[in-house]
Length: 258
Image (cartoon, rainbow, N blue to C red; front, top):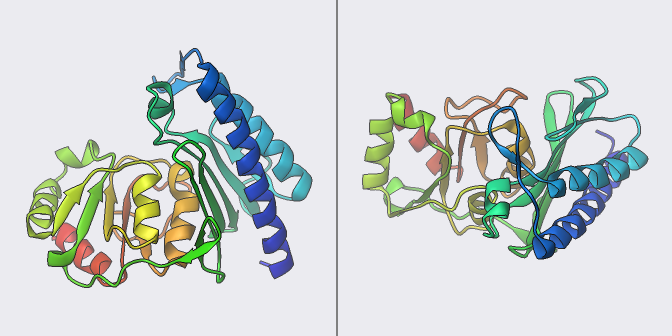
């Protein structure tokens, strides 16, 4: 993508994330009623108003791009430039008054994820990245750790319900036994920790592309590796994650494939 368009898009995404943060902070202080969507997941007025605020800014900045959002679906066509937006990823955390939720905004150019912004307004940090320009945490460039062996690895697992019924569950158990330690930070948090060198491997089997698209750009630009659990690149249909340092990721993938 043209560097000038990339810079414009990243500025817009960061502005949109901050606009969403204002909405989220307002309802965090005030409290909200919770509704259930058709898939039994919760949604609030904060989710909807945050996405509307995001859409207004992104459409004004890049009118040629389509937008695919968690709450209002696809506006425009797939292919070309496509914004991927989850205005409040972690609504369950939001309604239970824990700070592990975020706004996720990414941009795809064709099949390639080219930029991402991950804003966690109550947790208190924002990360962003664009292809070839590194990953940044509140203005400071970050890198994944230099961890190279499973024995040194700090692993975090998130949504793994599907994996418990998978043949790879035993392989995950062995991976955990051989690792340095296991955590379960979940949502945006363990990807932020991975990108800044505080974790080495993240495993999830039940995600949506809107949850992870921006985080994938951030981890990759921090010199990490981000694929699905089969080692495949991300698509709009991706449902799992294996993300880690460049040395640990292939070792974990080999174990899970066995």
